[in-house]
Image (cartoon, rainbow, N blue to C red; front, side, top):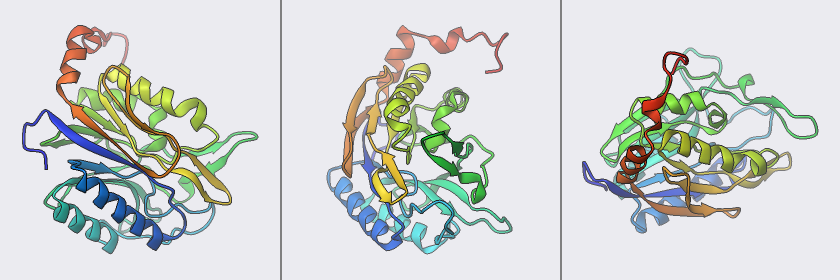
Length: 278
């Protein structure tokens, strides 16, 4: 585990091909987490929908609260491995609500839930000749921007489609975010053109690290994800990348790099607040 105030720490971003088979997905997740921990990762990040990626229109079989068996098991795993664990997203059941939340959970090395983020922007799209998905049929949008204040630094939390909304990340940067996490299941149709340029833009414009663990490949007959798990530094350089196959990328997060970039190019000090509500 990284010590409090440490400026350098190791991150592992996992790339997966989750399917409708929950038991298999969880088995693969546990094994990948253990491998990353053995290699010394201080924080291990899973992609969106790590436990289940269903066909559009089918019911969601996982409807647990944050105290359910899956989250409880992974909390125990984080504590046993003494590392931070980011559950990229999980279908959370909330009492009294008809729809689930697409929820990202940060677990600390003691096994406690350090932060919870519910996806703000839902993926309701219909691209002619491409892909049609309507996340809002089953998912309720979140209502809070989340930056987790941890001994590893301030971590901005988001999920997949959020990436297309730069105002979210600007707000996180204003709240002190140093590392922006973007767990995703970006579609194979949009990913080749948009995924990496958008991630690099979020790093460059906010002068933050970006960590993006991704789903990849064919999940079932009707759904493929782009993949390309990456870690990007505050200058916008890709420092670790895995293109297609399941696996992991690792990188050292150096928080002093943020200070160097911001001192030389102090963009945040030049924002025209008199013209823009930022």
